[in-house]
Length: 456
Image (tube, rainbow, N blue to C red; front, side, top):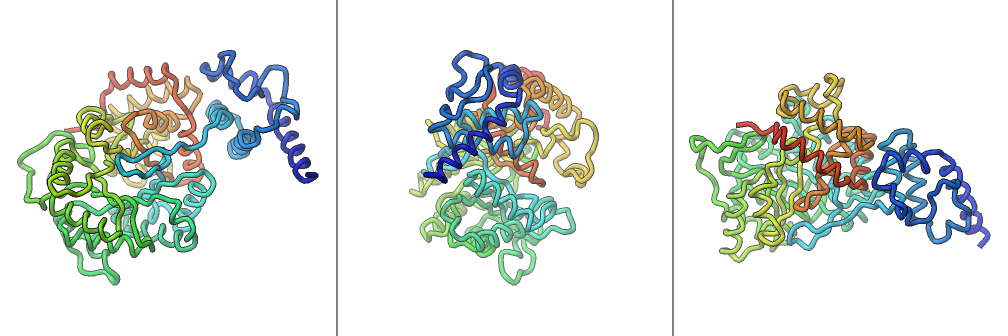
């Protein structure tokens, strides 16, 4: 009892010290209009009379611990930190949501990994995993057999990212059952590719990547080996075998159609993997409304499971999913959850490129990689979104990620970070809820600058 009492007094003293900051009564309430209502303080702790008395703290340890952690991790020197700290006080833990019809529940934020192996070392990858999973409660990781990217970097070796996750799992075996691992099989690459070669150990000769049954099964075996696991929770088709306009293109050109592997053949291989216990569910990526409908049709005709997820590009700078695809994937229709990739437009929606090209940043290092996010139309829209974020007292990255979370068709949003500060800010964004006025302001900019990163 003496130890408990001592801890209680210590925590009370710490909280008193924290609350002594003028932040609580003035800054937070003034910078966050939604908190100005008389009933906004459910804890009965925040008031203009001063810090709470020790007796007020009884039964509120978990909330106060989150507050203390928020202040420790990010001292509230800015409006962004203030709003995130208050989100922690008001119960802002990471929420879990279902992925389509899978029955799996994942956090609304998914840890992306595509820089691990080029811009991030194995040690840095493990540091991100430790922080996101063990400290913040993220339970969802997205990888791909072709990662890291871009493949134009001379250090690129496909499969490296999966191998980094595998060495982390080997050191943290008890976490395998706690985390949902998603990875991807590469779509059609007609030319001989090292991706296909690296599916075996030692690597075979480079070969084209296709989605025929043998290739899908070989790719899965390679991923299982590198990940050092016996199963994959969500196995995704990275992009279709058939021609589709993707990665910034939108207009279908029949002249580019090609011979492709039938969806039923690919699905048959995925179903075999499910029955073998090597994957639990499968999903799509960079797919169209037509493609989704064909996959569901094939599954129903074969008596196989339907896809449970779709991983497409989606952000404030590209909202095309919200039309026909959202209808097709709605819970009332095919019930396929969206996993947005590049929700920060490759980093453009952090705002860091508005004043130049920062040293070491992705688009500085790789001038031709996802350059659509830095074109004049996208830059103009980004400036206006940043103005909304500034007025709201949050960072542009926080605004962008919280907006993705607010979409009814989004299951979990895939983030990516090259530094720990970026990772912390990205995860924090999923404890912030945008106001109706902020959402309306975002829609207004969208109507003025519709999907500026989508070209012909």
